[in-house]
Image (cartoon, rainbow, N blue to C red; front, top):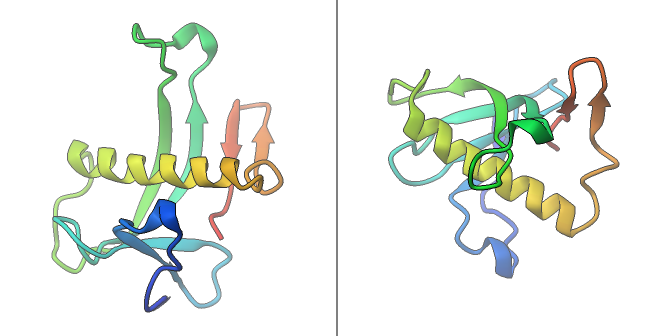
Length: 124
């Protein structure tokens, strides 16, 4: 799996704790965590789903669900159903989505599956 040596930073991403990794022959990019408790873990996102309006939380926010696959776990950490890890990569997913929305590239790369009310995308 090849990885970037460094992130291309902008003012918004100077504190990024991850980079992208591409497995040869795959259509999608993975995320490699570069610091902190989960350093060197490589994973990719699967299906991303947002709750319906009627499932809004009491604070007015819509819950988000996503699938992920751990591609490399060199420190053999327990990551399956680890709420700290899920929250951490969920925050990264939100950052990626916000960045795409801000720069206008979010919609053209997403496919809406009406049968499952799901947004699907390969992270590039």
